[in-house]
Length: 265
Length: 263
Image (cartoon, rainbow over all chains, first blue to last red):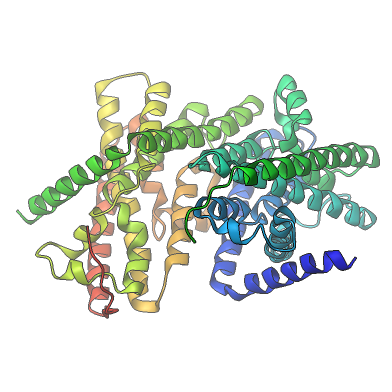
């Protein structure tokens, strides 16, 4: 337990750092409100012509779905840029000899940042949902902790995929393209803007087996249409992919450090 | 005469910026293709939507791609020609305008044209390719597309200059400027029919995103002199307003005693 204390302190420091910049904080939240508002306009128009139900979702569920997917993506930390810069600028040389594991140092650091973002996004998301389309249909409060678990797993999975991509900086000078491609895969195959039930059949099947859907689609699906069987299926995928990406990141980091060559100081 | 001088300055900067962008050719190509790929993901979004729904706000797939094409090229032109627009606020705060004030050229144009954004070339090409893809090729159509991409760029640039110049009046407005940019981009890439009431009023006045892509798309499909005059009127009004807004604000500028070398 004592071994984990250091990670808890890193988390606490990062938490207070992220509470300092108020203007950043407000701008981020304004963006969230705005983007969901435009989505609301779009879907209101679509539902007014198509009837009450599209791909099994009502307008109310569709807007809450989008609020949850945006909540996950907008609460991500800046880990990709930070780790890539650490590696490229050689700052990592000062971080690998500390009495902690670099990957878990980054994770605790990210938790502080994401924690602040997620809390504010959840409050704003709930207010927006209530104002825009009213309370979420058929929500059973007992399910909330389970939905929250899936949401956190989605965020952790997102973190470990990002850190893997960032660690490629050990070998590639310019690795931003990987981040772009990944974020667009979440955007599309991850069902960030459209539930994957709306995809053509074959694509839906493919998307269900890929990790991207478990970053955004999984938690949002559980949020608006909870069922125990689906919960177990989504959580299993999330835990599976999370474990895979944690192991890959530890492996990639070990290999990378062996090849590390820092000039000067 | 005055306008010609300004255009010459912009052309000179464009030439220099282009040759410096081309110095690192691999980086230029990666950023350009990266941006094209990045923008293409929105085709996926609209493709899925139109697989399920026939029209949205009176637009079909082709019309949505058309407003996307115009917005993308307008955005690209803005940042290729006036890359420093996004840095105005930061430059005011840091007191970096001194070197521009000493030069015998128009301060605003000198500032905004002296930088470029390489990835914005990707936005220009993406818009062009998309337009060619959805609009049957005709010289008149292409001519109109290029013309409206420039008017769109002027509207876009005007609003960004306005938002960044707020720094003269109220302190660092970088946050507001990036929000304004998001508003303008987002409002210009969704079908007009989804906007109602106050939102519609806003996109025709205070955040004139309608003049970037929605009005031009309407004109390309169905030209009318009335709408065309309104568009030109809006572009000119915004250009004049932001120019004077910046000039007035500049009187409040205080040097930061920062020594910078402008290369």
